[in-house]
Image 1: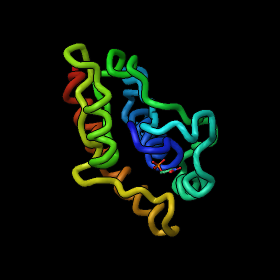
Image 2: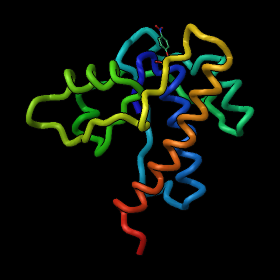
Image 3: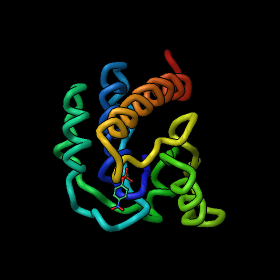
Amino acid sequence: MVCLGNICRSPTAEAVLRAKLEAAGLAQHVVVDSAGTGDWHVGSPPDPRSQRHAAKRGYDLSSLRGRQVAEADFHHFDLILAMDDDNLADLRRLAPPGSSRAEVRLFAATAVPDPYTGSAAGFEQVLDLVESAADAWVQNLVDRLGTS
Ligand code: 4NP
């Protein structure tokens, strides 16, 4: 999962999807990670507001650290999921032409808005959108992996 800073939306999505995959018994079949298109927060823990709002719903973001998307990600991952249209456009621009393994798509049916400069409601909205998109991705991954 990829956003701009890798301290709000994509670490939230990483923790939520990982928790839902664990609950579905799929954790050992899927490598979940997150990164940012920007480099300002490389090595930093998630924004304290994201950590606090996520913790209220049972998700622990504290061990995550920011990193920037790298070309290797396009070779390593099957799916790279963008939080908004800007992230999607940046990822498509960064993708190595002709040699990308990854399918690059939006994470949710609608953009997950950047909460960084907004209010507490923005962080709750991120969690609402991320939880419902993660449910859909768990089903998608069940289908991709086969259920037998
Ligand atoms: P994120 O939010 O992309 O959801 O991690 C942001 C965090 C930091 C900045 C922008 C967005 N920033 O400009 O530092």
